[in-house]
Length: 167
Ligand code: MN
View 1 (tube, helix red, strand yellow):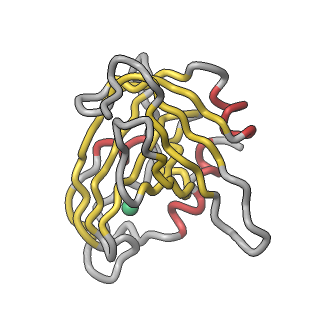
View 2 (cartoon, protein in one colour):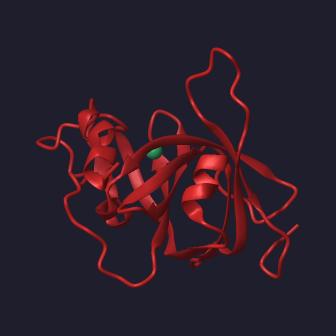
View 3 (cartoon, protein in one colour):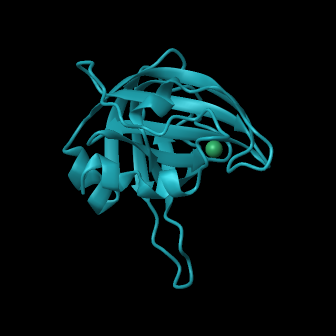
């Protein structure tokens, strides 16, 4: 699947005449892949966690936000891939549009996978290091088994024990 096919779901949900969110035709030119956490005050406040991979931002909704405490297992619901330019986005999504509310860039930086990230996404265990302002060190995303009638992919975002972990 190329990046533009991967963004169909993203584009279908949005009217780019009305929202200032990026339609996403551009590619990242930097050396290291980026990550971003956006605090999104929509119908319910949540944090959007995004990792650049394969020309898009792989994305999860983390209702409670990331925690530096390895004892905290934070639910992370996998959502549609977002365009790379979304990592720069903050501001208002207008009333009536998908995700209406305020988006604030809460953390931003680069990341590196600790093992093959494509295999990690497929197998349901993605281990990586974050180099952000707030989020540092080793983290893991683990996919939970789906219940029979469940559509969404539920993952857990967990801080791994290292010098950046805080109880
Ligand atoms: Mn959101």
